[in-house]
Amino acid sequence: MDDTTKVIIIPCSGIGKTYGTVSREAAYEVIDVICPQTSTLVPLSKLVLGDEEAKTAIAENRVITIDGCALACATKMVEESGGSVNHQFAVLDAYRRHRQMKPRGISELNEGGLQLAHALATEIAAAVDELQGEENA
Amino acid sequence: MSDYLTFTHDKFTFEIATDRLYNATGVWAKADGDSVTVGVSDFFQQHNGDVAFAEVFEVGTVVQAGDEFANIETIKLDIDLPSPLSGTILAVNEALDLEAEVINHDPYGAGWLAQFAASDWAAAVKTLMTPQQYYEHTKAEAQAEGS
Image (cartoon, rainbow over all chains, first blue to last red; front, side, top):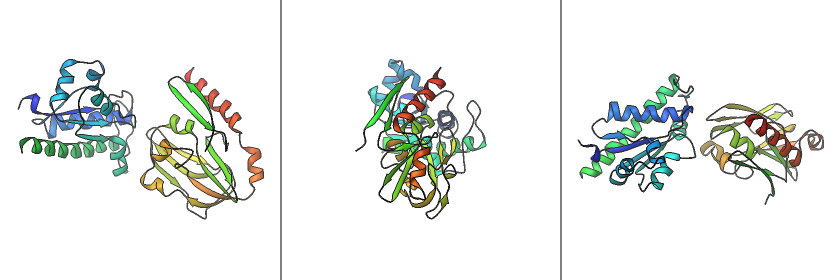
């Protein structure tokens, strides 16, 4: 499957932030493990820099954002870059649903953080499947 | 409607409501008739980040000034909040169970934490900071952390 028909995943770019790390771990699991054929990642930093290829990708494909905090930089940047967000996930909301998975750590997440990333990845993968189903309908 | 003292540090602007008193942690207390409503300041919520969970002790709990009466878990920290006054908890903001983020959105209004029956409000007033004092306190704290 060509990248142009994949669902675009855009996680938080917060470096040194626990919840940002959870968002990226979840994104990597989706694109590398659960939905490698149907999803791909566009780094938020490329949109911030105005990268034309990244802007075209979000304009022409379905987009899922994963925000690390209430600032919602990933979602806002997609919208400011001419794209629209089909599904928005927030790590904090995921944690509220899975309070036993308390994330800690930055470069290396604790067990709770890894579990939360996996739970979030599972939810995102379901959204990818749903979007692909709509695309193929 | 509250008036505010404001200051800007780095890219953040902080508001301090002028119609209530504060302890050093950033818990405000506002008397209204026989009850005193408490919550956290705008500086507290911005400084500590998005609130994931807020748990306040049960209605009927008796606390002394300085004792823990609530716990707030943010994306950065778990914080035990010291009560700004001695008294009995009369009511707890039930909205926090489902929407703890209201503390971030409206710390001086809908994000209130609890209402107390003060055992000695006059004594509490003497131990709390005025808005101007809290303004100086937070400004110094922000500058110290930013330097």
